[in-house]
Length: 123
Image (tube, rainbow, N blue to C red; front, side):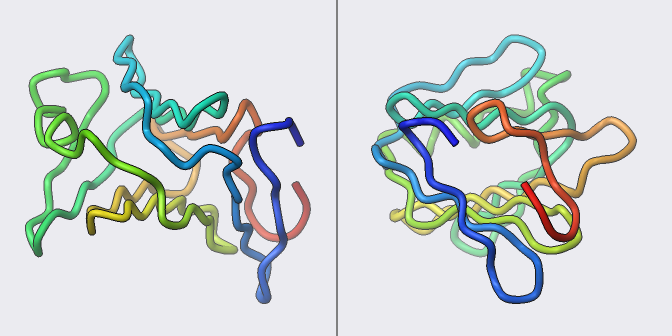
C-alpha cells in the first residue's frame, strides 16, 4: 500500500481501493490510459467500457480516437473503486459515470497505484 490508497478486502474476495485524494487531476494517454487521482494512478491497458447516462462507450487505449467520451468526464471525483473476485475493476465517479475494466487476460490489464489486478483473495 502507498500513502495514496488503502486496499480493503471485500466479502466474497473482491477489493476496495480507498483513495486519499478522490479528485481526478489528470488523464494520461500513452498507449494506456492513466487516471490520476492526486498521487494515485489507475492505469488501464486494453479495452474497457465507460457507461454515461445509460450509454455504453467502448474504449481502447490502443485506439486514441475511442477515448473522447472519457475526456467528457472531467472534472470528476471518485465515488468508489473496487474489483470483484473475478478481477474486474470498476471506477465509479461522483458524477454518475462508471468505468468498467475486464479481468486481466488477453490484451487487458489494470493497476491501481502500481498494484496489479488480483483475482480472488490476496493483494
